[in-house]
Image (cartoon, rainbow, N blue to C red; front, side):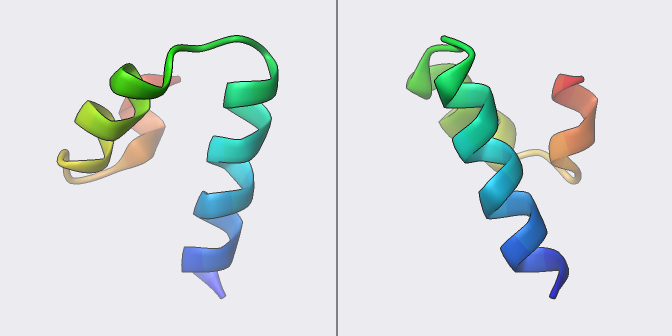
Length: 36
Protein backbone atom coordinates (compact mmCIF):
# COMPACT_ATOMS: atom_id res chain seq x y z
CA UNK A 1 0.00 0.00 0.00
CA UNK A 2 1.03 3.63 -0.33
CA UNK A 3 1.23 3.98 3.46
CA UNK A 4 3.71 1.10 3.60
CA UNK A 5 5.80 2.70 0.86
CA UNK A 6 5.89 6.02 2.69
CA UNK A 7 6.97 4.36 5.93
CA UNK A 8 9.72 2.50 4.07
CA UNK A 9 10.80 5.79 2.49
CA UNK A 10 11.09 7.41 5.92
CA UNK A 11 13.21 4.49 7.14
CA UNK A 12 15.59 5.03 4.23
CA UNK A 13 15.80 8.77 4.91
CA UNK A 14 16.62 8.10 8.56
CA UNK A 15 19.38 5.71 7.45
CA UNK A 16 20.83 8.53 5.35
CA UNK A 17 21.05 10.62 8.51
CA UNK A 18 18.13 12.99 8.11
CA UNK A 19 17.03 14.05 11.63
CA UNK A 20 13.86 12.38 12.86
CA UNK A 21 12.30 15.69 13.94
CA UNK A 22 12.40 16.92 10.32
CA UNK A 23 10.61 13.78 9.22
CA UNK A 24 7.96 14.18 11.91
CA UNK A 25 7.34 17.77 10.78
CA UNK A 26 7.08 16.64 7.17
CA UNK A 27 4.51 14.00 8.10
CA UNK A 28 2.15 16.83 9.04
CA UNK A 29 2.35 18.17 5.49
CA UNK A 30 0.10 16.99 2.68
CA UNK A 31 2.81 14.90 1.06
CA UNK A 32 6.11 13.55 2.35
CA UNK A 33 7.56 14.02 -1.12
CA UNK A 34 7.88 17.75 -0.43
CA UNK A 35 10.84 16.73 1.75
CA UNK A 36 12.61 15.51 -1.37
